[in-house]
Image (cartoon, rainbow, N blue to C red):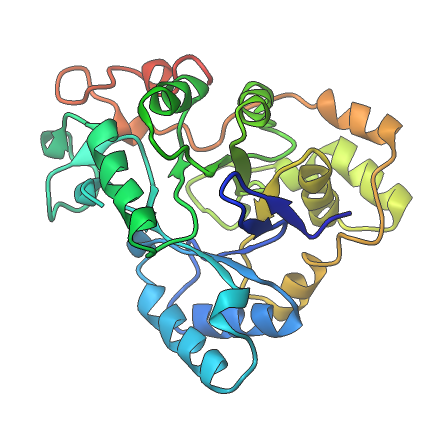
Length: 291
């Protein structure tokens, strides 16, 4: 199994990356250092996570110590909703400059083509190897492809055995866009999400038969279906376990069992909708029916 997926830019994205959403300051730096030392080459970040400064300090030290070269790392960052004028667009939603959170009165009309044009300029001047989007429905991605001079290389979306994104996956493959799955383990550490992904009886059964953990099965499923995965952890043992997904595979009959798992999106985006103040009046409209 390949450890990387080719992007439409000619660059490659590692099939397993370390997610850093909700990784606490004081822990995230050590987690990133551990991950890189054990073999991770993709670190997924975002300004809004509030920990990029600590991660940057770790990168600098690892580069200076010769642990890894900058050109060997795939580092993702994301443009937050209040900065929709240039890396990755985090949500297809715009809020007032300098605003925090998602108060309805801070919502603004979104001009994705204008934002994307500014991001294309980053490619032109050599500031990034690839640009992409996050949390785009199939329709929103299709609309962007119609006007983009440089096609998005990646759409980073929620993807795990309990939300398999079949329609999105097929569209991305047909149009040369790589799908990267966040919360591939169902985000079990998120207190405000009710996540039972890793407790699903199908995953537990497969894990027992293969001598793996349910988390490893979920990650391996993602890679075998053709998308990269971004598990988050600050625990060294689990960081190592999450990378041990290359020298085995899930048999076809078990893959079929996974397709039969009941589907439910975890991160619905209710905080982005409002009857009068948001351009999205309902969750269904936000996701264009993919809910």
